[in-house]
Length: 243
Image (cartoon, rainbow, N blue to C red; front, side):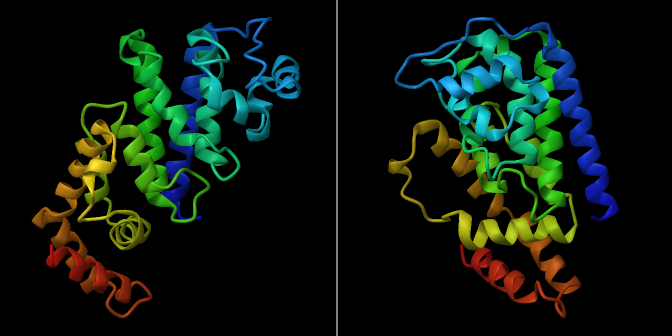
């Protein structure tokens, strides 16, 4: 682990600690059963007796999918939110609902929450993004999925995109080339996407096509022309230059 990754990971852990502290005002309700079709009785029993920070992705997957619809209300979502967001950060491969949990912030009307709660969530989202960029093989949600998810609960992706462009690390560049190569269609059929997702997807495409993004990749190619990233960078530059 590089010093940058260690620093970003610690910052993320600090943000998660703030979440636990902030949302500790919402205790576990003694009765949290959901609709029989969707609730998991075994998971429910574990949620009742296991300390919040020890609940696993397996324990919370079913609840995360159904909270705010057929299992639990806003206060229940807030109670489990620190642990759900911690799983997104450090166990996303086993936690199946990362994008959904972030998206449910809108369902919970998070922009109307008390200021301290909003700030805690905002701190976490940026800390998670910086950690994702610092570790290419991190256990977190993937960069493209994160941006689309956050784009549904924030008004502006620009702060996140600017952090990406200003992060010159090899891992951040690898995420960028992956986005261009595999994760993002620069000539999409937008009619197939929900309206808000269309807007955020287009925002990312516009950012990718900005001259500063191409210049960032060209500079990275010059710095790594003799390294293992050279071919990927060369192709990414060619793709953007041809848009």
